[in-house]
Length: 171
Image (cartoon, rainbow, N blue to C red; front, side, top):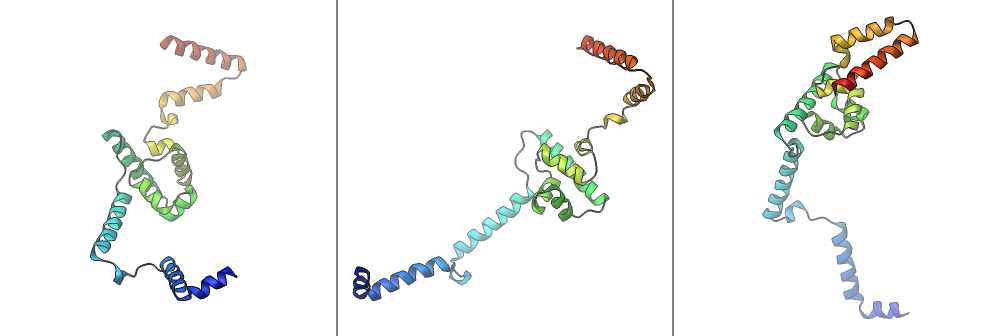
């Protein structure tokens, strides 16, 4: 009853104020209503966002920047080598397409992302990092070959003990 009385008493004023509030919430200013400063600020923000998407964040050192740039180049080269699109790799890795592009441009990436990218590209994570594959070292290949020729568990145990002893002496 009180609401009816207030509505009747202030009907014109109340209705106008209520509709003004609704209109302000529902509508955004039209481009024609913007001032030149607002338009310029919006354009500046868009340009800054585009620049930030291409420019990696600051690194602790120049070596870090070069390292991540090389990792990104390796990712891109491998992706193109096997004929995958950026969309396919980003879906397999579980990141957005722009984020995958950032990785290719040299942005820092976590170890988890590195492993997922390596799986998507069907390579070892060490290949993305530019470190040699341990199986490509001739000494290790010889050792593994000799290990396979050992016939008894006792000889394998003796070799492990010898390697342990030698590695302790070297430290």
